[in-house]
Image (cartoon, rainbow, N blue to C red; front, side, top):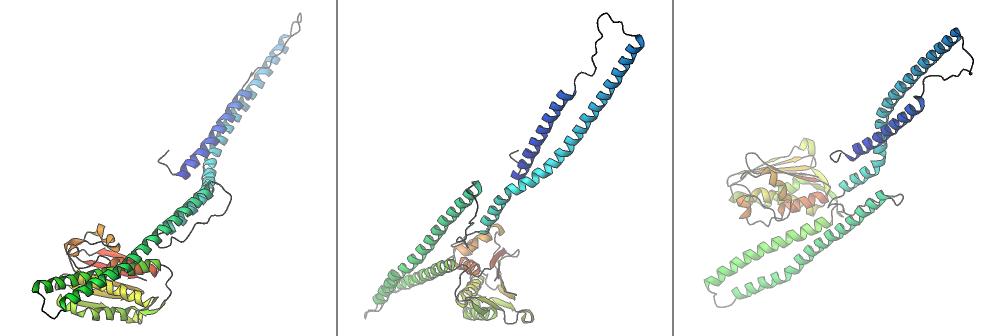
Length: 373
C-alpha cells in the first residue's frame, strides 16, 4: 500500500469500508431471514386428526417452506449482486471524493512548484479555516520568507564585498605605479613583478565587475526599471566588432545569420545595458573557449540569439552547470583566464527578462548557447 499514490490509497480505503459495511449488512440479513422453514402446528390432546386434513396441512407446509426458501435465495442473490454493483460504484465515488479532498494539496503543490529562486517574493496565501491544509500552506510561506531573506542577504553580501574590495585594489595599483615611476630606473625584476601584478589586478577587477553585475541582476529579476526596445542585431554587431582583435588572433571564422524578412531589426523589450553585456558574454565565451582556427556561428531568431562555437567535446550531463557561478568544464576552461562568471551572468540577465537559457554540448565539440527572451 505504501507504494501506491495517496489518492489511490484513499479510494481503496473508502471502497473497502463500504464493502465491509455491505458484508456486515448481508450477515445480519442471513441471521434474520434464514430461520425455521417449517410452520409449527399442534393438535389438541385426545383428538385424532383426519388423514386427509393431515396430508393437506403437510402439503401446505411444504409449499410455504419452498416458497420461503425461494424468496430467501432470491433475496440473498439480489443482495449479493447489489453489493457487487455498489462496490464498483463506491470505488468510483471514492475516487471522486478522494480527488475533492486532495484538491487543496494539489493546489499547494502547483503553487510551490511555480516559486523558485527567481520569484521568492510570491506566497501561497491560502484562505480558509485553520485546518491541516492551511497550516501546511502557512508553513511553506514562512519557509519561503526565510529563504527570501537568506538569498537577499547573500546578494547584499556579494555586492558589498565586491564594492569594498575596490579600495584596496586601487591602493595596490597606485603603489605599483609609484614604485615603477621613480626617477631612477627600477630593476628588471621589479618591472616584471609589476606587470604580473597589474595583470592579476585586472583579473580581480573583472571578477568584481562580474560579481557586482550578477548581484544587481539577481536583485532585479522580474523588476527591470528600464525596459525599452533593443535591437539584438545591433548588439551582436557591436560585440563582434569590439572583439575583432581577439577573433583575429585566434584565426576564428565568424558566420552570422540574420533573417531580416522574419525579424526586421530584431527588437526585444529589455534593458540595453544588461542585454549588451549578455550578448558580449556569449561572444566572449565563444571566442575564449574556441579552438585556434575554429568558427563561431551566430543566428538571430524571433526574440532569440543562438551562438555555437567549435572546441573540445564536453560532457552533456555537466554542461548545465555552466550557468552557475565559477563553473568550468574541460582543461581549457580550467586553465583559461576567465572568471567563471560569464555564463552565470547570461543566465541571470536572461532570467531577469523572463526568458530562458539553453546550453547544449555539440556532438562534434564545442558549445551551443541559445538565449530566448
